Length: 432
Image 1: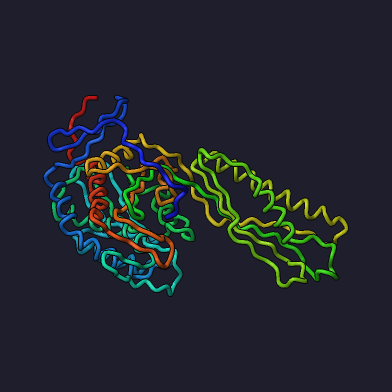
Image 2: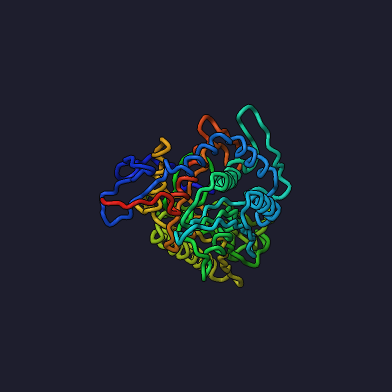
């Protein structure tokens, strides 16, 4: 999970009022579907109470899952363990051909299908020590929050609904998916929502810690850029076009890009490489570039400007040495593209999440991020990403830590309420 920027708290739109067995979020636009949060529904209430009461169970899931290595493209062992745990809860489970683990809880009617997912993979390479260290209420290990907390939350929601016998008109899919982190390039979600897609009416990703709500997708374009030439001795072959010089020209152009602050748009040359010695004209100048935006349009503009700059740098370097026998060539290699979708806090799924949080006593801050939800959002499928509660620090580092605090259980409770509401529990007639 990677964040675009810090975000400010935002109140839910409309007001919350209590009615028998439900909480309604009144919306000023009558055309909008009313939100119903079944906070007082007997079975849901029992499930909420069990989550708080059995909070130690959730923490045990989080720790034990985290101690199963899941480096990029090698999530199978952790996935098989998630399958076993879902089955122990009495749920039928399948693993699709790319490695996504999908547990299905059939609905009692023809309500919408709701998917809630946590990702299996971490950013850490094979061989990383994933043993969890405990110091009081603090747990430290690579991936303990991102996304072992998400996986534990998904398991806890499934367990609480099973134990409390929460009946939902719609079917619920509990998913542990592969490939969310950078190298995976959202491959699990791309497969899940391939054409024809599996029927999913609402999608919730649980990713990371805290009580934040992602309602927009930060898109990204990542490239490996290679300027290639013959190379030679810095003195004896002087006068030939130089790949590293061409790359330098490109970096200088990129550094001068002007991008909007709103919608937030960014660019970065993150890695540069090439060269064999101080007295060698290198045959290669390479760089890895990351560009991001909350706006599909702004990202497309930036991408086009970037490619123009690369081509211009190539022309200029070759023109600098008109008598050279050899010229530099340019190769652009796609390292991963994540689609963007602008923030939408007024959608039904976002309003449901905000109202569910309010019913638990907090206002979730909203904003955009880069998560599994990028894929369904870009396809027009209602999707959000929520945090799993507690407090995490040092994501993507080997010193990543998690502390539950006094109200860590509210993360799984929030997820349960959102899933219950979206799947149709406690729906009543509504007049704006």
